[in-house]
Image 1 (cartoon, rainbow, N blue to C red):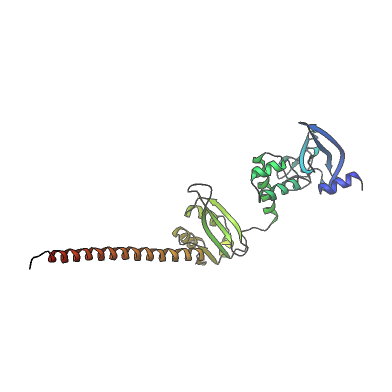
Image 2: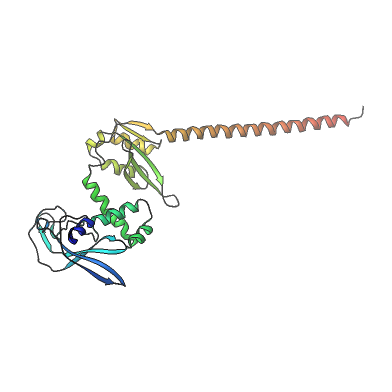
Amino acid sequence: MHANSLLKKLLRIEKIVIENIYFEQENEEEQLIIRARPMSKELSRCPICGKRCPGYDLSKKTKRWRSLDLGSQRVYIEANAPRVKCAEHGVIVAGVPWARHKAKFTYDFEMAVTWLALHATAKDVSEFFRIDWHTVGSIAGRVQESLEQAMPSRFDNLVAIGIDETSYKKGHKYMTVVVDHRTGNLIWARKGYGKAVLTEFFEGLSVEQRASIKYVTADGANWITTCISDYCPKAERCIDPFHVVSWANGCVDEVRKATVRKAKKDAAAGKKAERSKKKRISKYKNIPC
């Protein structure tokens, strides 16, 4: 197999023409640089809509994209970065088949970072891939946006949803979350809680999406009930089992506490009556016959 073909397989990029391969020394570290360009069919495309566009300039400015390492050696893809004029998006740097718009990393590199970010801290991910820790969040954001655009809307075909608030970080900081019971996926989350926050979720749905909701599980908060009545009046309001059990345990606990308090009060009253009886008996014993 030719070296260029082997590199394409390793990089998992088919629509690329490799022009040169060389090594470069930077900070006492040797890096592999792959000089490339898109195939002719992929040239002069808008990076957002993907349409072929007329060239705007013939800039010789080059750009590098970090690819997955080969062993412990960093790998970069280097190519020219000319601009095109898109009828919809204006003058913009031409897209490349190996990276997202405005990204400094290849598709595979960003997918690998995002996957590891789901199982480790941002600090651990940054150290493993040798990138800045704040870059981890921006990479994950781009991947999430890209995946969401390729997938059907998570708000379509909602039938049964669950609403709850949960705490995060330290202190009294809460966020409202909404899940789809059929898929078990989180579909919406915002900082804070209350009617104003939950209203944002329902306002973001179309009339058809609201109408498809038949069941809503939540706790007994009045602000949740009000929102459901306003936006999904035909949906059946369900109290989730967790809160039912929690409330039942709370009622049992209150009865237990009341019973204990009454028992202590009765015991104290009994002891007081016993002491009074003993005093009376003692008093009568000391009276001379």
